[in-house]
Image (tube, rainbow, N blue to C red; front, top):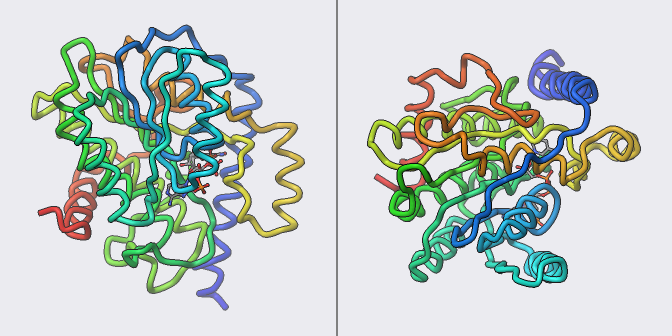
Length: 326
Ligand SMILES: NC(=O)c1ccc[n+]([C@@H]2O[C@H](COP(=O)([O-])OP(=O)(O)OC[C@H]3O[C@@H](n4cnc5c(N)ncnc54)[C@H](OP(=O)(O)O)[C@@H]3O)[C@@H](O)[C@H]2O)c1
């Protein structure tokens, strides 16, 4: 009874209380507006999960600014429909859909390889796709779904595209990796000895762990790039509470209540895209000013755990081992 409380109920209570706090703060902050952003003509961007929700709006704005955008997603119909919608809006749109299932390492490898074969630059990589509160399940390679899709799939994708990102970055125009995390990382715990939640499964804890892992990865990658002298920066972003399909796995009565509240009080996907786009595009973030954690349209401080160098390195090393990248 007590262990069920610790394992299942407590992470859920913590996440819902955090959600309430974030929602209140974002209502106090008022609506977010996208600042004027520089043109992106000649730049290439990849947006994972760009078929709908926040990712779609990120992709649409990047196209509007002149970037060549590749939407990576697992649902071909949704991805192609997104491409059509964007092309209807912008006559000169350079946007395409490529199949990418982050729950399959083979699919990630194929996506990265076919991208590299095209010899295109890569200026912006937005690791946006994600799942939340999905029932216990495994990816094709046996990883817990949240850990595998939100974190490990993106780790591999970034790793495989890192040389292209390095080659594409120039002084005054660094390549940027933007990891779409969540405020949920604040209550996440990294269980290095049970990253795949085999000992006990809570979908709430698993989501928070995956989002914390994304922040740790993001900070460590940024440091690695800075210390190696590469023109690549990496940051983590919380888009806020946004009215999207991400919440569809909530317990049905909660989902019904959430969808009513979301329509009234959550950010729209376009508002949700604002902080992601700021982190990806703001010219003031060049050189040493890149990286960090972004929320509510600007850089914010986050929890001390995310800066723990030991934890960052341990997670990085384990991830390399899990992906056979050594
Ligand atoms: N909405 C919020 O309030 C909120 C708050 C904090 C953080 N976030 C983060 O924002 C990001 C975007 O979420 P959203 O709110 O826009 O949710 P969404 O509308 O559900 O979009 C998620 C996207 O990820 C894709 N995806 C899921 N599993 C995938 C896989 N295995 N391979 C490739 N693509 C996959 C989905 O495509 P299919 O499922 O159709 O394949 C979809 O396009 C997520 O990382 C989420 O954690 C959202």
